Length: 401
Image (cartoon, rainbow, N blue to C red; front, side):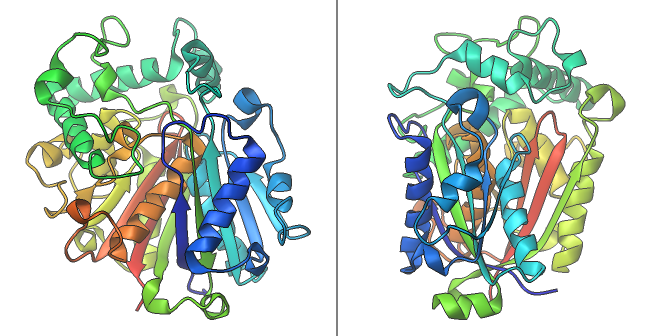
C-alpha cells in the first residue's frame, strides 16, 4: 500500500458562521487549506465533501458540485459523503482511498455544518428533529429531542452497569472546558466550568430528559464550522513542496458500521467501533500503548468514557476513571481531547471527524497552542462516530519520518 500523508490542515473558529453561505464556506475551507502550504486548488487531484444536515438545514445537496465551483477543481474526481456525525471522518477516508487506488497523488477532504441561522441563533426544536433522522425510526416515538434522549439512556445504562456516578462523568466536561480556554478555535473558549457548576441544577444546567441523568453540561455544542485536510502520497508531497518531516502519516485507519437499532447490539461494547479501531492499529503496526495523543467523539460525556475504552486506554467500564484519575490530561498517560472535545470545542457535525484528525496533525507537528501541546507526541488515535454508536471511523497517525 502507498503511504498517505496529511500535508496541511485548516479550520474555522467553531461556533457561528453567521451569514456565510454554503458556497462561501467551501471556498473558505479549500482556499484556507491551500494557503497553509502556498498552493493553488488546481494542485489537488481529488476531493471529498462531508456533511450531514446540508439538505435539511441548508437546503443544499450535491456538495461535490460546490467544490467543483472553486477554480482549479472543475472536472476532477469529487464526491459527497454522509455518515451522520462520522461524515467528516468518512470524507478523509474517501480521499485516502482514492489516492491508494491511483486516481491521484493529492486530495482534499472538507467537512462542514451550518446549524445556526444568519443571526447565530438556534432553532432547537428543528435541530432536534433533524438529528433524530439519524436514529432508527422504531426508537424515536416518545422522544422530543431524540439524540439526547438516546444517549441519556446509554448514560444511565453505563452508570448502572459499571457503578459510575454523574460526578465521574461531569469531571470529564470540566477537564474539556479547561482545555478549550486555551484553544482559539473552540466555541466555549471564553467559558470556565467548575465541578460544582457542572453538577448543580441551576440556570442553563438542567436534566435534559426527566428521570435520566444527562445534564446540559454533559452535552456537546450546536455548532457552525468547517475544516479541511490536504492529503498526499509521497510523490504528492514532493509535488506540493511539503517536506516529509512537516507532514503526518495516516498510518492506519478503519471503518465499520453496526445495525442502527440499539436493540440489536451491546452499545456498551460497540463491536463496529472496536473492529474499526483494531483495524487502524493493525494497519499502523501499533497499539494503544504507543499512543499519547487522542481525539474521541464525546458528543456526550458518556461517549468520552466509552471512547477511551474503544481506543484501548481503559478496560470496559473504566473509561471514566481514566479521566477522573488525571490520565487524560495534556502531559499525562494520553492527552485525550486536548482540543476541548465536542463538548467544549464544538460539534459542527460534518466537520467533526476532519477536525479530530486536524488537531492531531497540529499536536504531532508541534503546532498546538503552547498550554495544550504534548511535550513528546508519539502516536495519535482518533475515534469518530455517527448515530447511536453506529458508524465508526478510526485513524492512527504518526509524524512522518
